[in-house]
Image (cartoon, rainbow, N blue to C red; front, side, top):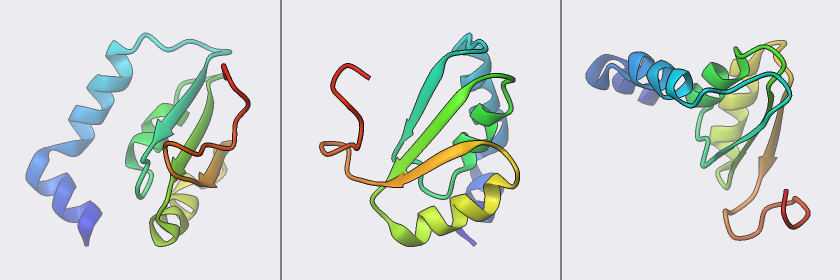
Length: 91
């Protein structure tokens, strides 16, 4: 219900697509969607060919939705807080 309300009320799809377009992402880059929630932006990011996408959120239920939404796209999902990410320094 949340995703539907956001999509209808805020024109979320266009906003997220514009964000990805203006980021000038290219194949080989790594991107982190921190606070990914249910993965709406994550899916837009993963549509860029060759982009390596990771998405983190502390909410297990939101991550389950993000996992279901990713389909066959290679997205690495993790449950973590922004101040305790499971990545080495300088990543």
